[in-house]
Length: 60
Image (tube, rainbow, N blue to C red; front, side, top):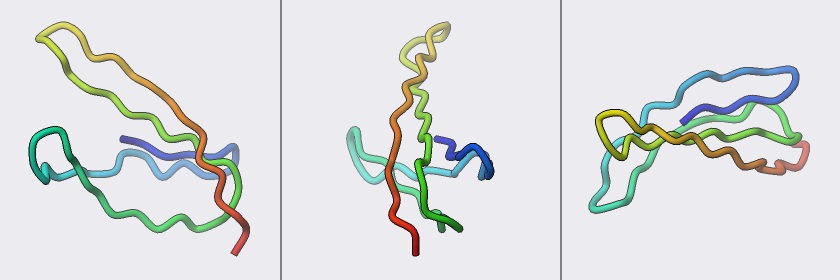
């Protein structure tokens, strides 16, 4: 998983397996705004689809 805005790129966030299909990671977002969260999931030896969502974080 990686997180970024137009101004800040936090890079990859390490995730740990919490159980079947559940992963968790810790991150501190330094600013509010629209954060792009990209998640990739290796489904086969050759397939690694990436999906993106935007997380709206209010200014703090």
